[in-house]
Image (cartoon, rainbow, N blue to C red):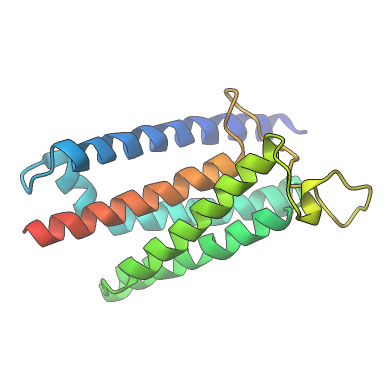
Amino acid sequence: MPAYVEIINKILSVGTIFLQIAIVLLFINLLFFRSNRNNFLLFFKKYTFILGFLAALGAFLLSLFYSNVVGFPPCELCWIQRIFLYPQLILFSMELYKRDRSIIDFSIVFAIFGSLVSLYHIYIENGGSSSLGCAISSSSATQVSCATRYIYEFGYITMPTMALTLSLFIIIILMNYKYISRMQ
């Protein structure tokens, strides 16, 4: 594997950790310090759709980078996660272009299903059993095992962990947006 891929993996892993910290801080603020004067929550409300767009764009480009440039073939669960990820880019683009807030509920639903698939993928990666064909090691060149870890940084960050983090981030920023909007 080229050295630049290792560097990108480290950068993405650190970025994933920062997103996880942001998720926890947003959750704590929404749970215990919710107010329409909470500057932290107001910041995320103000930039919800820009942050969502940038996160979805980054995930879209990086998934294509890993599969088409680096050559990591996506497994069945990776494809399903992409099915719930790629529309996020379109939804956030529509919101930024048309200022149509109706995308919020659709985006939350996509993120919830993406989170569930990511959790299941993490379970498979960590030795869980599955009835899916991709969960087992395969001698076939066309089938990729869902248990294969192309990225494994800091003892827990893998591609499904990154996908789960992104989905949870989208859920929490959109829930924050909905909550703060109702309060104002």
